[in-house]
Length: 205
Image: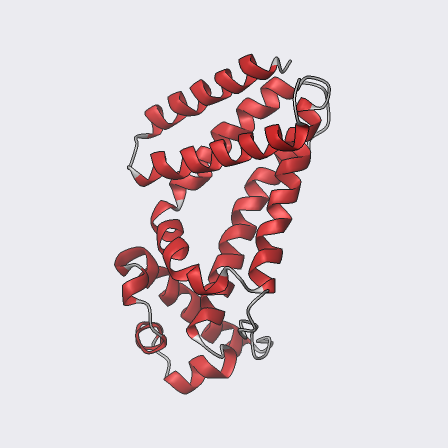
C-alpha cells in the first residue's frame, strides 16, 4: 500500500517574495544533492544554504521528503519536456524515432547524473507514496505507448514483456553508463549500439 507520508507543499507561493524563498530553497537543495549527495541533505542544511530561517522552510515544506519530491517533480518535468516531442511524434519512421529517443534519453540522463544519483538514494522514502508513483507512471506510460507503437506489428512474442524489456534495458543501461562518467562521444556510440540491437532484433522499420 502507498505510504501515508505528507509530501505535498503546505501552500503554494504566490507573492514575489514567497516565490523567491521557495526558489532559493529548491536551488539550495539541488546544490546540496549534487555536491554532497543524500547523506548531506537535511532541512537545516538546506535552509542555511538558501539563506532562510528554518521556520521559512517549514512554512512551505512539511518535511525534507516533501522538498525531495518537489525537486524530483521539477527534474522529471524538465526531462519529460525534452523527451516528449520524440515520444509523441507521429509517423511510421519507428526505427529513426527509437534511435533518436535512445540518444536523447542517454543525453538527458548524463546532463543531470549527479542530481539523479542523489535523488535515487534520497528518494527511497518516497517510492511507496501515491504521489511519487503517479509522477513516475506519467512518463512511463508515454514511453510504453511509444514502444508499443513501434513493436505492435513486429514483436513475435508477448508485447507486454517486450515493451517492459526494452524500457528496463534502456533505462538501466543509460543509468549505469552515465553513472560511470562516460564521455559524450562514447555515450552516443553506446546509445546507437543499443538502438541497432533493438531495431535489428525486433525488425523495426
